[in-house]
Amino acid sequence: MRFSTVSLAALTVASPALASPVSRGDTESERANAVKQAFQIAWDGYYAHAFPHDQLHPVDNGYDDNYDGWGASAVDAISTAAIMGNQQVVDQILNYIPTIDFKYSNETTISLFETTIRYLGGLLAGYDLLSGPAANLVSDKSKVHALLSQAQVLADTLSYAFETPSGVPYNNLLINNRSNDGSTTNGLATTGSLIIEWTHLADLTGNETYAQLAQKAESYLIHPQPSWAEPFPGLVGSTIDIATGEFTDNYVTWNGGDDSFYEYLIKFFVYDQSRFSEYRDVWLAAANSTLEHLLSHPAPKPELTFVNIWDNGTLISTSEHLTGFIGGNFLLAGSVLGRQDLIDAGLAFTDSWHATYNSTATKIGPEVFAWDEAGVPADQEAFYKEAGFYITSADYVLRPEVIESYYYAYRITGDTKYQDWAWDAFLAINSTCHVGSGYSGIQNVNIAGGDGFDNVQESFLFAEVLKYSYMIHAEDADWQTKADGLNKFVFNTEAHPFKIAGPA
Ligand SMILES: *[C@@H]1O[C@H](CO)[C@@H](O)[C@H](O)[C@H]1NC(C)=O
Ligand SMILES: *[C@@H]1O[C@H](CO)[C@@H](O)[C@H](O)[C@H]1NC(C)=O
Ligand SMILES: *[C@@H]1O[C@H](CO)[C@@H](O)[C@H](O)[C@H]1NC(C)=O
Ligand SMILES: *[C@@H]1O[C@H](CO)[C@@H](O)[C@H](O)[C@H]1NC(C)=O
Ligand SMILES: *[C@@H]1O[C@H](CO)[C@@H](O)[C@H](O)[C@H]1NC(C)=O
Ligand SMILES: *[C@@H]1O[C@H](CO)[C@@H](O)[C@H](O)[C@H]1NC(C)=O
Ligand SMILES: *[C@@H]1O[C@H](CO)[C@@H](O)[C@H](O)[C@H]1NC(C)=O
Image 1 (tube, rainbow, N blue to C red):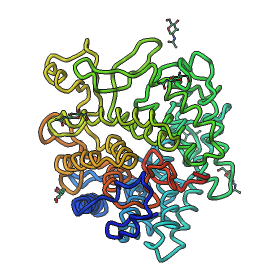
Image 2: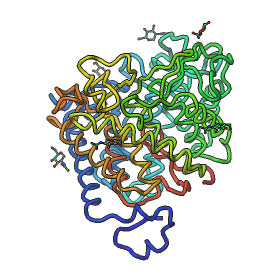
Image 3: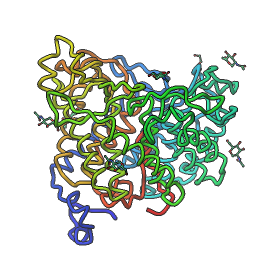
């Protein structure tokens, strides 16, 4: 169902749970348009100075090929361009995609995980949107089909990574001669964030091998061995032995390195509730264990709720910008499973990561922060007492996770406070990170102006930051998350929306 700001007829058939997203006036559409304008600025800079390389260096109009050299920003931008209805950019990307040679990369090693979430994710979401609810943007259907055929070429190039004794893949690949970097282990997130993309490709093409490869690898994570690697039900270690599929540690965290393993457990269930209920059960166990054992409230601000690391019995009070997705993940689970307790936990996390934004000089949250009373740096004592945390890595690299959680909080509760928070964050990023021909990461979120630029316009600015910033103010649409849990799309960890395969 599509809500319109002008059609009263649409309002009368709106489900009560979704009532508030329609109560928008000119302010909200102005906000959505301002985000579209920022997308155009970022794209124009990239297209003029960096395309078809991976990422723009906006300060000096340079570029990098840090993500395989296949035009990561272009492929990462397609689903956002489609959602924004940006026909010109959709055309530019669709004309480019058939020209990519996914069998060859100039880069020394490429990451199976990064390649899966950005490229496979972007191609499949582009296919779903442009053959589905955004089909009106495309006249030449063969270009849409190329998204799927190129996804298949890419997966066929990568699939040798799973040819290991256990089926746990190598992550760092030299695809030109089908070799790897010789690692004996793989990480939890890099192993455990492949199932949605590879299964969706299998569903779209009918080639079950893609699904089997990713699900075999994941089987070691949801049935962890040895038993000490699962210190609490559902919460597991961070490193897996490629030869045996066994964990080599029991270091538990929702921070970077482990994050999207937990994220995907519930999202895979959302993708197909008829086939993947086992993943829901593991997510529920992990969520319960997290609420029971890992929650932590900073001494000066006990109303905030962060998540500890568990390191073999020792709790470590450190978290990250990356971990800010946790609010949205609990909110999605709560809405789909009809569990108010999970929604409440998701809102508590979302509020707390909001505090990492509103406490700083730039109003942008830091990369890494901590709240262990024993470790407060002398020069941050006042900041810690006021904010409830202190900053241990002050940079911001255009990450989306906090805005992502605002998105779920707004879509699921309808409380416009979250739209206001997303708008505050957008304005802060738009003014602090804009430089030269685009947007850049900054060195220090707690110095007005950001204290200098890292000169990288990350491809996920297109895929994630600008998509969630836009959608939170945009009309309802098939791809939007639904308050009643009856979703038609689910977002991968790069914010690429996939059409759900099973019954909602
Ligand atoms: C690979 O690198 C070489 C040398 O830097 C360059 O000439 C060539 O165009 C690159 N090929 C691709 C496909 O990027
Ligand atoms: C199915 O995918 C696998 C894995 O990439 C590939 O080896 C195989 O050739 C594919 N089968 C077909 C019929 O395309
Ligand atoms: C594959 O290529 C890389 C880089 O060119 C080289 O270092 C490596 O030895 C090759 N591996 C095999 C198994 O041929
Ligand atoms: C965990 O700590 C125990 C001692 O408390 C030690 O015996 C064990 O080796 C540690 N395990 C790991 C994986 O570090
Ligand atoms: C975790 O699960 C146990 C057993 O079902 C239940 O008693 C407990 O209330 C749950 N804890 C939370 C925080 O949901
Ligand atoms: C900052 O955010 C926190 C959490 O949402 C909130 O409790 C606090 O009132 C906010 N402070 C300001 C100055 O807006
Ligand atoms: C966002 O930044 C651009 C570039 O500086 C500027 O033109 C635009 O007005 C800004 N948008 C808002 C809403 O402030």
